[in-house]
Length: 353
Ligand SMILES: *Cc1c(COP(=O)(O)O)cnc(C)c1O
Image 1 (cartoon, rainbow, N blue to C red):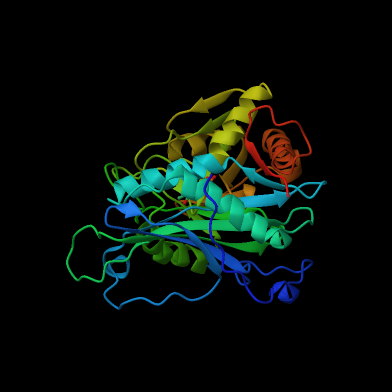
Image 2 (image 1 turned 90 degrees about the vertical axis):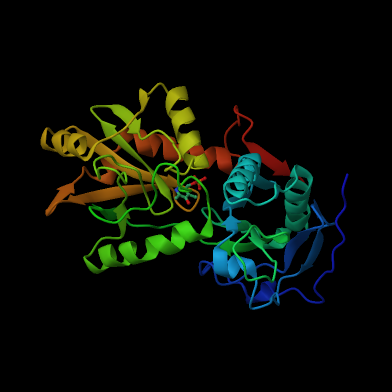
């Protein structure tokens, strides 16, 4: 078993944190994990005080975008154990993203043991409060200082964490994007690669200026089929069936998406993974059969959609309280993540302190 050398902070910054009023993404836990790749292998990881990194202006990730990330959450259960939700899936997905971006695979040992030791050290930062969690950001970027377009020979893998408050998101107003494209077949849309998110900012901001929280991406070829939204996969309930677009090279394979589909099947709902056209949504809405729409992702687990805009019209959906399927699954999933209900799928990775 790998034991990672840790250089600990002299004094924790935890007193700066108000657990009753956590601002998202602003306060970072005391430590971070760092591992460097050079000479064709991962060097021994280290745990260091969270802090700035120095780098050359020629650092290749900044110029050519070899940079990938993950996002996951840790919770505290009633005994104070730390619970991670399906972390191996994040590990596997990071390596899929890395493969597409021509980056080396991180080892399971560095990812999992690094994560575990980092969380043990910063356990006090995992909020005990209901609804709150410790957000975990593993990422990897190219570190060669070389100005030439080629895969870097050196990389840095890092994990840092930050406490996040409960997600009291109001139901979203979203608009179907008629022009811009996030991802095309054969591209890298399935990867959590930094550039995908940079390129999505302008279209998203334009939709926000028109009064919508988020946009819904459609396929690059015809703008006819629904893809996903922001950092969420999308699901619809039409005529009592849970329907979601299949994952492909253009859609990111969300771990929440997969978990929601599994739970829906467990609970006896009909699930269909197939293309969903804009026309189908419009028709279903007209017929009064578009009962639910929501996004799935680590941030909110399930984010309800109140309104879908398309082509000059707002389609308003039934009240959130009346959404049987998503509310049922959302409650079950939260109970599994926080250890309140038996974990029959072995999704929870428990760290006993
Ligand atoms: C991260 C992400 C998701 C959701 O994935 P989860 O594993 O459920 O958090 C969906 N779409 C995109 C584009 C994402 O980046």
